[in-house]
Image 1 (tube, rainbow, N blue to C red):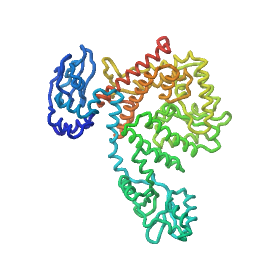
Image 2: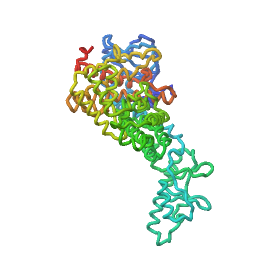
Image 3: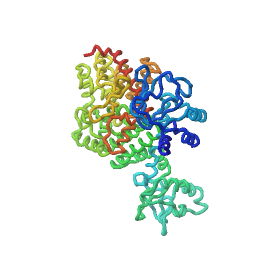
Image 4: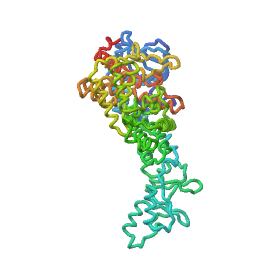
Length: 608
């Protein structure tokens, strides 16, 4: 019983209770068993119990219409008890049930003593998903507590002899772009930082300071590579240290760890990754920094940060990554004569975890280097090493179709519109969701304006473009039941095909019609509200649906990544909590309503 109650404390809303309240549940709750087909609560009947399912399933029905299904860790009966009203629904056991029964008196005492606990039962879907994120925010703390110091997070340190003149040592530090000076003395090391240089400037004449050893902090505190980062944080905090030298086991200086980078690691690592990316002087350094992005994503997701904000942060970091790779790999003579472009979800700034590569190159008319294949292959190989799978559709710069001149892309746009085809619409959708990140971005702006201009003159093709919104059926079937994903995916739904594609593509078709230059789906939805296509309430529903879909997909993908499984777009609905299932159902209903709206807007029933 105690072990079961300990498990109960890990689920909302019981996470909101203090120890005294938990003790009250322990003293008064009972465990009950009910066979299949037992009616727990009849319609129009008062209940005197809050039910919490340990194992089994219960259906809520209104005159034989299925309203909801309750499964493991779900609770029901709370609102009826708080409002002292008879139940609107009949609650029927459909799988033999083992459950907690919390008496009415205990439950109402908990509600009176804890406003947040009581409010949970009346909270909106959005409020509950925020609670769920708050619950997860400490999920990855254990992993962070065992992280260790390695060279990838260290800054360069300038090592000098003790007798070196201060000005000469400072000059060497500047040339090597170091953050501090390590002084090698006859017996041990000292350190010189910005604070020591201030001392030198203020007292050099008074104290006759000339050699670097005269202004060093000696003996200095240092650590060895491999030390736990959490222990390092305690050490630096205890001694008010901002710069900490790191040595290997043979006492060779590896670099200096800065407090700001350490704090970044324990927050979300974004600062650390950005600094590494900016300072990267070779390909391996860029690749090393890029590989840390997934750690940052996990930390942010665990803290409950919204998926669209995570996507935005990831996009900004990736822009830096692509810029650095572009500068390192592409010859300098190319860089003002071509544009590197991201396509698809990266172009929309909506890709979070690494999926496939989607990119293109636009060259200035009359400029096509002979070694283009060699350079583009090297670029794609770098992305391979970072961990970006190659695009199965070959939408990459190593494909001549996505690596050509400005005029040739214009010819493609003209053909997409004048000779519409299924493949042409796919290419048009890919290109419309593009974003220039390196090189001469003006080439991309020219093509974007040209596409919007051509569509403006040929709007009759938009219904054909929008038609693919009906390519996939909703995974929400009759009586709000989830439809299985098919063979090999029992109890799973493909959230990308079943919801995300329809939402993104419907918004994309409307964005083309309204001539929007934004590529991000969230910004496009907000603009659709601004131009009067949809009201603020409908736009908010769309944004919430998009957030729910992306959050649950990200959570499922991170779990698969942690277990070493292949990432896909399937979500297992049986492992979702009641709250998550409710939120997902509402999101899927919003997407279906939007599909109907788009279908009516473009008269898709008349498109063959």
